[in-house]
Length: 232
Image (cartoon, rainbow, N blue to C red; front, side, top):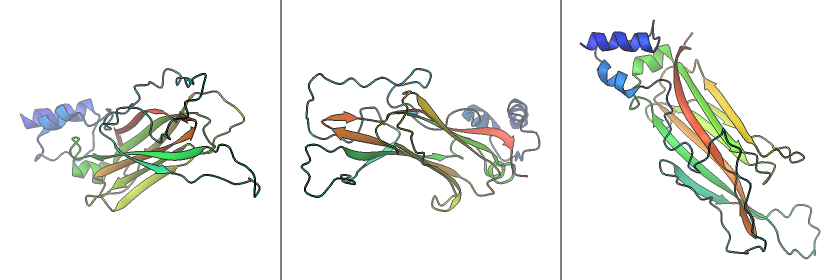
């Protein structure tokens, strides 16, 4: 019976040539569906879709001047979050100048660790076949600052501390144009070598507070494994 499930997995996921040990419970592997689905939990905490433009900020007619905010609204279950409030930027302000208001910026960080074996992948496949691990993310062109987004993804060994491969993105925004669209960030890990067991996904988005709160939103974060042989 297990051999039948193995044949089914091999045919459906085009795993010809991949190591498929008899010791695995192939029915469980098939039901886990480790290929082609998003392995991140809660990929759109703001309830937004990349297929619809980001919402325009709703600003009151009179500024509320409420207490500073450094974290956007949303359901961030599944994510580990943290906030880094940045010091005021006084660059270019002459000594003795009277300052009425300065923007205060903060980084809002969200991270997840994906356990590849728990998601249905097996050691020999990861070590020898090395399927593609595809990363994708979408962030809002918010005009908050010239640096509003950072991504750092690491492929980790079984000890969760040894980094086998990593990819970092820290774009600079062109503030001279404004289209207010979603911007895509994507990367494909391939030929990364043996030992990968976890994917650590971390991104940071910059927010601004100046009488009102101005967030930078994101959506569609994903980690997807594709059954493509990349070990050669």
